[in-house]
Length: 252
Image (cartoon, rainbow, N blue to C red; front, side, top):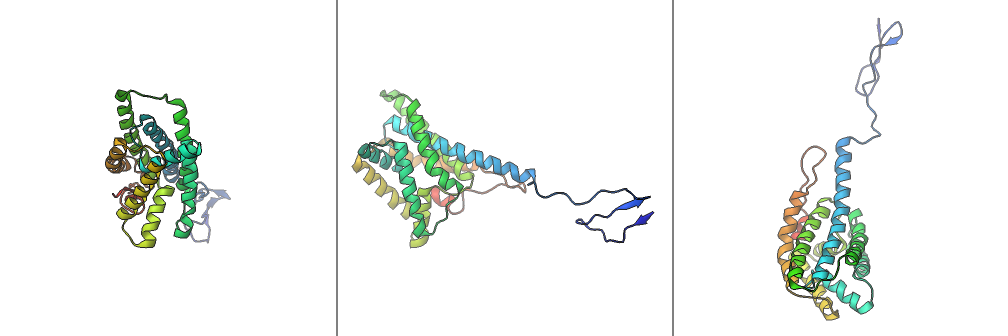
C-alpha cells in the first residue's frame, strides 16, 4: 500500500491505491452549475416581477373601466390618450420611455425590472381593456374600483419585492431626491400633483377613486411587500420595504 506524497486539501485529489486501484474519489465538486438555493430565489423573483407588472397593468385597466378616478400617472396617460388618439397602454409605454430618458442626467441605473416596467404594464393595460366589458352601473363600478386598488397594491408588492429595480417613475422620484437633497415626500408630492393637474387638464379622470387610491396604496403595498418578500439563499429573508428606493417609493 502506498500513499501519495502530495498534500491533501479540498481542492486536490489524494488517491489511496492498492495495486494501482483507486480507493477514494476526488474531494472537489464542479462549480459550473449554480446551487439550487440560488437558482430557486432567482426563478421566483422573475416570476414575481412579470406577474406583478402584468397585474399592475390589469389593475390600472380596472380603474379605467370603473370611471371613478385614476391613479396620478393614469390620469396623465388617459388625458394624453384623449388628445392623441393612442390607446392608454401605448401612451403608458411612451411616457415610461420618456421618463426613463430623464434618468440619464440624474445618473440613475435601470435594472431588468425598470425596462420591463415600461413595456409589460402598457401591454397589460390594453390587453385587459380589450377583454373587460364596459360598465355603466354604479353598483358594478364601485366594486371594480375597489378591486383595481387592491390588485394594484398586490401587484406593487410583487414586482418591488422581486428587487429587479424600480419603475421609471419611481426612479425619477428617487433620482430627484438624490440630486436636489429634497425629501422623498416632497419630490413625490410635487411630481404627482404636476402629473394629476396636467392629466386632468388634458381630459383625464379625477374623482373619488383618485383619493381612495392615494390613501390606500401605501398601506396595501407595504403589506404585500412583506407577504411576497423573497428569502435569501442563506435562508434569511430579503427586506424590501425599508431601504432606498424600495422604502422611499412607499413614503407619503
